[in-house]
Amino acid sequence: MGGDRILPYAAQYLQPIKTRQDQIEQDELTTHQIDLNRRIVNFVYWRMRADAELTEEAPKAHSAAYEADKLAASGESDEVGLRHLHFYRDLAEMAVKQTRVAEMRRILADNGIRHLELEFLTDWFLPPGERRTASDQLRHSLLEAAGELGARHVKVGDFFDSPVAMSQLIEEFAKLCREAANHGTRVVFELMPFSVIDNLEDALALVKGADQRNGGICIDLWHVVKLGIPYERVAAAQRHVASIEINDGYLKTPPGMTLHEETIGHRQFCGEGEFDVRGFVDQMVRAGYSAPWGIEVLNAAHRRELPLADVVQRAYTTTRAQFAA
Image (cartoon, rainbow, N blue to C red):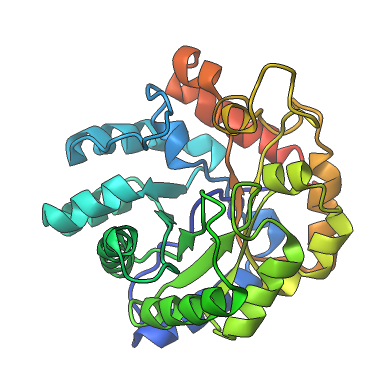
């Protein structure tokens, strides 16, 4: 499989088209027209922060110059076709607050980055209060940066199993999607074991109830396996899946390790763990999934021990091997 559509926490970086809505429609058309043999593997921002240790707090962004060095390092691996990037919220906020959007755009363009995703927004569904106020501030930064940088989508969800009615979730998700459309981007909701939505049925109820063309589901294979969701059920819902992240890992959390520790520090490259990654990919491709693929491998040992160039090469090689030639 050649290089133009495996991405993982990312999205297409396209030049502005006539209108914001036209941009969404054109991006969708382009994504569906690209043959599977011309897709690119992208790796997440976490992988570029190979020197960072994940904690409860997100890693802080460094200067734009630091990020340029990281992008340049990924550009050196041109032979493996890496052309995507994931930005965490700190980098998005830095771009907006420090008025460095033009510089960020130049860095992306100079290094051939064509796919971009921004994340992660939580508490977007809460009633007025301190957490919602903080969420709204981040929401503004993420959407503004998404519009300025041409991000394909912004990823949202919930880390705290927050108690909230489905009707409220649907109403707030629809509002968020409409706001995102004004910035020419999508919103994808990631279901996970730690979320108020921890099953595929509720995730589908969310996006169907909101009924927004730029709203969809983000599927992370790690969460699918941990939640025990059959691959065929995900494949049957592929029309509502807007982004997929693949990885590998343990089928069951090892003794003495928490689920949180496992998810941020013990994921594996595709084919190096116990998941049936190729089986999942085959089912989604046969079902007609044609949106971006991503790689999300959060692994503490990789972050500490592997040079960035090795991480990039292994991420691409192991992921590409999961797809039919």
